[in-house]
Amino acid sequence: MSEMPEESLNESIDQRLEKITTKALTAIEQANDLDALEACRVAYLGSKGAFTQIMQLLRTVPKEDKPRIGALVNEQKKKIEDRLEESKAVLYEAHLSAKLSSESIDVTAPGRRVPLGHEHPLSQIRQEIISIFYSMGFSTVDGPEIETDYYNFDSLNTPANHPARDEQDTFYTNLGPHVLLRSQTSTVQVRVMEKTKPPIRVIAPGRVYRNEEVNARKYPLFHQVEGLLIDKDVTFGQLKGTLQAFIKALFKKDLNIRFRPDFFPFTEPSAELDSQCPFCQGKGCRTCGNRGWLELLGCGMVDPNVLKEAGIDPEIYSGFAFGMGLERLAMLKYDINDIRHFYTNDLRFLEQF
Ligand SMILES: [Zn+2]
Image (tube, rainbow, N blue to C red; front, side, top):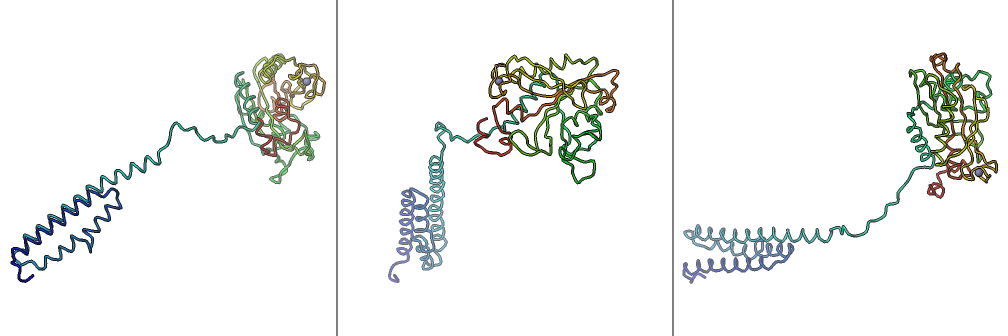
């Protein structure tokens, strides 16, 4: 090397630099993915790369040539780096779009079916009953399930010695001698009468509790819907018309109804309402026990004492009330033979509705 003229040595470095740069640019051009490109970068600009090794020769360049050769090295190195950046951007774009298209969704493919839940039969019939009474101008009211014996009994004209107050029928609580789980939704009627000036037109759907042995017909928890209408000059004929319209809407049939005298402490007169059996049209079938009639609900004219107790003047106002059990109506309508089905959460039962 020492015999070589300086000029020739410098030229040689120039040439080698340009040659290695050309090779590097060609290799970059040919790299067809990001991994290949990274391999190029390491092969030329890595710490042991071809271009880096050429740069080591700078040390052998005479002092006066160093600025020129140094500038040339920087210029070539920048060419390689710029080309690497450009290629990287292009390859990254290609990589991304390949990835996206491999993950894309075929919008024409059939969807996967998600199993749908649905409403419990009691919720269905509850909603149906609410809608029917809405259409007749009734609104829905709610009240507490933990009640005092005043609202559950006294205010409803149920005297202290009435058998319904017996512990065998009512769940008393340890919250105090007068605190119980309501045994009827009539409690809500009293609360509404206390707070609202007539006219009143409400239904109160809700849970009630009775201390009863569990069997196919009875369960200690069940649901009632009570209705209350108070206005001037309310008659038993209006009660009859309202309930007849309700039964027609519920069973989607014109059915005869009949009243049988009954007794409830808070209505006078009181009656049990029977409807012609919607399943046999009165001819007799299994559902109606061959009687041709179904006992549907209890009703009556609100006892003047109940109105007075709630602060409504019975000389001016009168009203009617009715109450029905949701379980009983659902059992009739859907032909269910055991009340316990509603509470066992057995999907084989629930999926039929
Ligand atoms: Zn029948």
